[in-house]
Length: 430
Ligand SMILES: N[C@@H](Cc1c[nH]cn1)C(=O)NCC(=O)O
Image (spheres, rainbow, N blue to C red):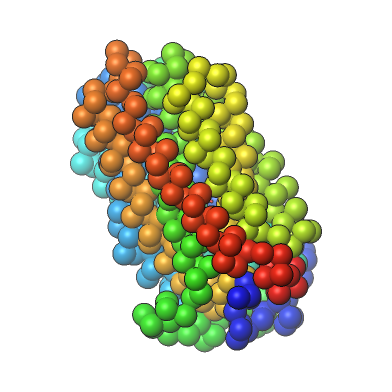
């Protein structure tokens, strides 16, 4: 089994936009992604404040992130098809606008229902936005250091996540005033993301009109039976995507800061900083790992290593009193390695005009997983009375995350065994 689809129309081989334009687009998309990831991760740092000042339960906090994922269980497949049909630039612009509105609604709503509606709206825009940005990179960098380019884009996105975690330190004054000012800051950052998306749409009109990019005409009509034509390797990749992201995002983006505060005795700023190092590591390591994969032409073994490090890190965190630095470093490597390999690998597994659809399908399942994992973790914490007075109550959540991450690792090993041997990976020419 080859990693390259048999009949993939290759845009890499055809004329491409110039390097200069590609770089301008790369920078604008990166800025847009920075803002988007900042808003995505803006709930974790205010979780404790929302509980103290507004009396939210863990289940309600979890719902603010779960509701981001819920609509995407259906919508993102449509979003992927829309990206293939209308092009990455138009969809990036449209969805960045929806995200900015969602962020504003979250920040300015007087009650839980309004905040949840804001996160819902943000989620509706954000996941299709993320697909569109990956497609943008594939459009402009396909065939030339794609893994490095995707890694670099994700790295800037991770800077947004890092910024959100560091915000209690950077914007201590805002946090001192309560839960709302930090979310207003997130809204301003979402507006910047929209401005960058507008710039990308503007620049993209030239190359698109010149026929240098895939157009809606090349996007084939979506057929359910096409999904059956994705090979077995794709399905293992999808299962790993669901399990690994469910754990890493439900833990890192929702509960880890609270967990560090309550189970490891850190204050809010230190807990946010500790969490942020995972994202900071990813800023540098994701493009470096992408570059390494481009050079070595090997993917599956690195994916398996990245997937293995997650359960190891969770075990260290939950079962030992070893320094938090160790688990943070292990999760940091996992968080850098898995995405650095997963998305370029997906783009090699499917035809360019099916890329949006393939990612859409992965993210349908991923969002169902993330949503379920957030709700399950929140429920387990409430059920076992997890909190500052009962740190042992977090045991159920940690066991749940541990089991899911072990299952993810098994999928990565199956992928390696099925389609990731050197001879398979060399089949596409590295
Ligand atoms: N579907 C997204 C989820 C996400 C993560 N951070 C913000 N949104 C995704 O998988 N993005 C790619 C990634 O590696 O984060």
